[in-house]
Structure formats: structure tokens, C-alpha cells
Length: 441
Image (cartoon, rainbow, N blue to C red; front, side, top):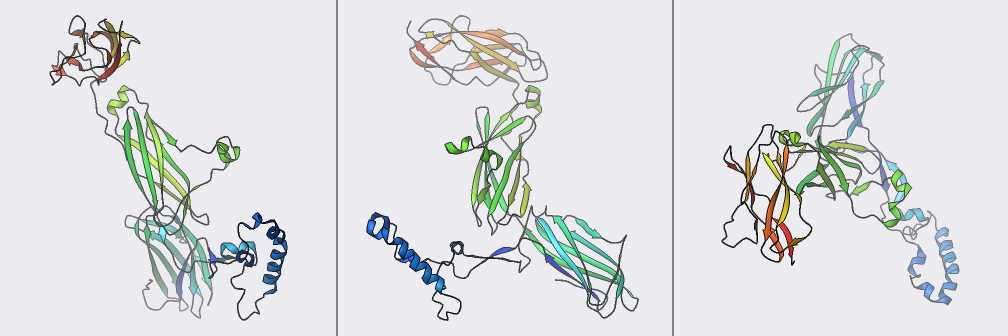
């Protein structure tokens, strides 16, 4: 794990990772109260048996209290002497016995001790601690400007270094010391401590677009060996987007709870593959100019969590991409449909044509195109079959009316409203089908 250069050294580095201790769990996982063997859940259904319950519990308590550690038969090793014993924890904490797993997003904290194992004092010690990854080398400690004056024989010098883990893969903690030994010889000691950084969780996303609303689903899976308590899973939308998290209906007692607003309990994602899903509703607030020049970047997730004993972690995802924004030169919108449409009576459909480009377009012609089927249309134009529109300025719009007439009762569809650019000889995509209800006069 470590290596030295230049023959035997008086100094040596020792590294211990600083992290929260763990609970000591008793080897006997299940303890019981003797009264549980004779008292059932239905004891209160019998008045006579219920009357004898206090005496029975008292006898059980005396019997269990009378046992002590001098009982060589260990008859009481499964007995519950105190209610807190049922959780299987002794109340003791255990310090880390190994270096342990290190995950992306955590803070690596290490206690480093440089020991003088010789019989002589060493002087003018320059100590450096660096974190080396596949991409960079970061300086964590450097005593070049104020060297340690001396370390006596058998003595040591201790310090603590911290590093926010932001890369996956192999990491090396490089500890070096430049010093004068007991013979006045200048020596250089390098030691290397290697470890691997793993990914604590995975984030899978799905994007769905319903009309003008975008829905983002994020599935977070726990890959660690400990439970993760998610403090925050917040979506930071890109420019011109807004985001709102969608949650299941809460219990009526929690909706107006001030305590719940002050303290929001973290969401538990269990160890070894536990998952939790988050759903966000996104809306775009960009203008026409922004939509033309915009990209399909939706934003990114900020994730913070804590482990069993409160050790924090934090990750940020890469930019989440949505459905590519398709540039349209024009947009045709329905402004108003008459509330009452009568059979074989003319009605007017209010439409709006918007220019989504930075240049003037037009003139235009609007008509009802014929589909591939030979079926006769139920709604047709009344009067001139083509509506002529003037040129529309950049990012401008124009309103117009299309005079129609319905030839059949019931729910009918207006299909094939098409716009044609007479100057550029370009036909645009038709307006989506519009349903109307035709009533008798």
C-alpha cells in the first residue's frame, strides 16, 4: 500500500479514514418477554383471564429480574429485561474497522499521522498531502512555508485533510515528507494510499410531452450498502422553463400541518437497490424569438442525502435533454369557435396566423385541402374556397375568419385547414382536426 525511497526512513505515514461510527448489534437478534408465551392478543376477551393479568405480569417481571450474569446455564439470555432491548442494539458505537467504501458526492475526511520510529529526533519536516485522480492532482496540505520544527524520537505529528469527491474511479492519497534525519541527511519520503470511488446511486429519466406541458420522471436507485435519506431532490429548470414537483395526495391531517411545513421528513431509499420515483411538471415560458433560438435542454437535478448516522452527500446530474424543439415558420391557432352551430347554416371560425421567424413572410392563401379518402367532407367552406391573407411581419400575427357550413348533424370534424405561401410556393402542415357539434335549427 505504501512505498519508500532512499533506504530506511525514520518517518512513516499512517492514515485512518474519519467517518461516523456504526451501531453495535447484539448477536442474539430476538429477545422476548416471558409473558408473551402465555398471554395472547385475545386475553381481554375473557374478563376472568384479564383480571389475573397484573399478577401474571408481576410474576414474569420478578422471574426475569431475578436472573443475573452468574447464571451459568444462560437461561435468561433470550429474555427481554428492558423494553429498549427489543431493538437489538447494545447502545455502543463501533469505530470503522476498515477503510470502507467511498462514494461520489461524499466528503473524504482522513486523519493522518506521521510517526518517528527511530531513536533520533528529525528536524525541518516539510509535509505535503495531495489527492490524485485520473484527471487532476489537488493539494490538500503543504507546510513548505512553515515546516514542522522537529519530531522527537517515538513522537508523531497529526493532521486532518478533507476532499469533496467529484470523480469516479481510482483515487490516490499522496503523502510526502522532506526532512533531516538524526545524521543530518536530507531525506524524501513518499507514501501512496489508493482507493476506488463508486457511484452511490443511478438516476434514470423519462420525458413525456402532453400538449404544451412536459412531464419529467426521475427514478433514483440506491447502489450503496446503507440506507439513503433523501433531503432534497430538486429540479433546476433551464432558462425560460419552470418546474413543479407533483406528489400523491397527502393525508388530510398533514395538508395544513405547520409542523410538516417546518420539518419535512426525508424520503428513505433502502440499501441494495431501493428505488424512488419523482415526477415534475415543466412549462416553457419563452417568447417566439426564444423558441426559435432555444435548445432542448430542460435542466438538471440537485440531489442531497444523508446516511444512517447523518453523513451528507450531494450530486448534480448532467443537463437533462427533452424533445428537440422543431422550428416552425408559422403557427396557425384557433381563436374562437361558435358556441352553437346549426345544420346547413353558415358559421365563422376565428383563426390566427403567427409568423415565428425573424423575416417577413407571405402573402398566404388558406383553404380546406382534400384528404386521400374519397369520402365527402361534412364541413366545407361557404363561399370563396380560398382566403387570401397579406404579408405578415417578423414575429407578427394576423387574425382572420373562415366561413364554413356543416352538412350533417352530430359531432363532426373540421379537417385539412391548410396555409400556402404564394411567394415561396410552400405548403405548411395542416391545422390539427377540430371537433364541433352540429345541432338542428
